[in-house]
Every structure is written in structure tokens, then in C-alpha cells.
Length: 248
Image (cartoon, rainbow, N blue to C red; front, side, top):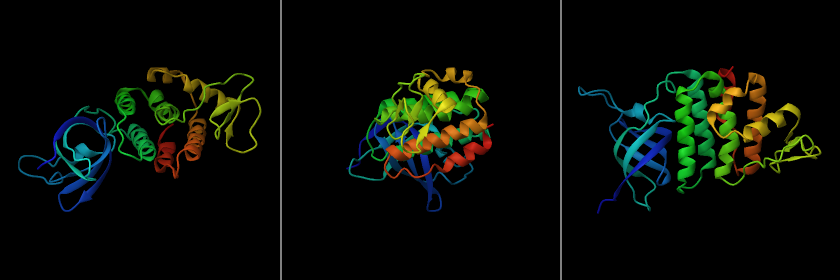
């Protein structure tokens, strides 16, 4: 008896070659959370057209019809097509680096195949907006995602900043009046800008943050530290170095 089929959207996280013509693709789906699928024959080129492996690039948003069996670690995809046809993310180096950063951050935080539609649509909205936004917003989207993604996992920073509480304790995830007795904290402009970014509700608001790339890089490394303190075995973000190099 074959597994039942379901319609779902999915964000491609990772693709690995399998055999001569197939791939195993990890996808964050709206219906089932993170799932792995075997997709046969997409790396071949025939007279009818080129292979369809390009649809499974990290960050791609797809409409899927999938077979789902809860006891299987590897299911299959019956149908797939673009849900959003990107105009820039796969061709523009800066935006591709931002998309890969978002994908890696999501991958490191999602460990179980649990459904979280709010999280899915948060990431989808960020990627869709990234594709068409101007450069200033694109450069600030990693900061926004890094600060707002923890909301979906229960460790979002407490937005209690004030002139008196001007130190951001990365261990406790809140602003304090006195500097913590450990090195994992932000102060001065870094703390103030983080507080402002925590209050951003719409991605268009990121246009007002005119930040030097060195300053932005320092914030991203601090936020990486925050994740490493709150997510077990988080490790290092491999995309952070590339992102730092390509974003002005």
C-alpha cells in the first residue's frame, strides 16, 4: 500500500547528489516541518529539456505534492514546481549570500520534523521580500532574521532597552543596567541598534538603518554568539564569512 499524498509548500534547505541522476533533498515544509525526499531523474538532460535539479537550490520555494509516511525517514515527491520564481536571489551574489545565511540559520535551529506554519511563512516572507528589495534592506535582512527567528523557538531577546538599561546580556537575552560579569554582551551603539531592530515589524522599515558593513558584521558575530549560547551544538555559521565579504 502506497503512502498518501499531500499538498504543501516547501523551502529547500540542502541537496545531495544520489546515484547518477537523482538527489536527496532536505526541505522545510509548511505541513510536516523538515523532511528528506528522494527525487529521481532530475539531473538528466533529455531531448524534451534540461534536468530539473535547478529547482532544488537552497532557498528555493516550491509547491509540492509529496508522499508522506510517518515511519519513513526518506519519502518521495510526486509533483514539484516553483511557488515563487525568483528574479534575483539565484543570480545576484549579495542576495544569494543572504538567502544561504537564512537557510543555514533555519537548518541549525530546526532539529525535529515538527510542524510550525508560522515559522515557515516567516521565512517565506523574508526570502520573497529579499528577492525584490533594494540593497540597503537586503544587507539588513540577516540582522532582522537573526533577531526575530528565536521568537519561533522560545528564546527571543527581551525588548526592555532604555537609557538606563543599555547593556545587552547575550546569556540572559535582556538589557541590564550594569555590564554583566562575562564577555558575552553588547553596549553603546551595538545595544541601541539591536533594540531598534527588535522593534522592526515590517521588512520595509529596514531601509532606515544605514549601517557600516564593519558594524553590521560585528552585530552578526554577536548574534551568532547568542545562538551558540541558546541552541545546543549550534557551532559556527559557515555562511557568515561569505556574507561578511560580499555585503557592503
